Image (cartoon, rainbow, N blue to C red):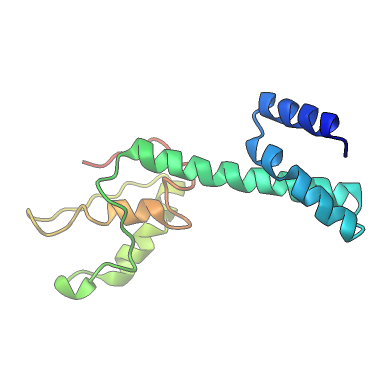
Length: 140
């Protein structure tokens, strides 16, 4: 690809706000040419990179907008601190099916019982409400 074409393509991708494609198209074009990929396969790989980057950026933006005090997950939670806490129930609630089913969830606990702790990691998981873009639920 000529240098002039390369610069024009980068400028167009920047104007279209496709930064990942702008940064990766030349490398992927070389790889596609060396492995005899079709244009469609090359374009698919290029757009997959852009979609993945946008998805990751959207999750980061939601986490930032949520203003979580710290990044936590259930892998680091010590359920032995509160032995009366039903681990299976907490993990079930963290999957977020209650949100999809439009049901309410109320956690009640005394001060220091960590009753609100689970809201943060439930938003970070693969099926977490914040990472999947759920809106309209609040915690206090």
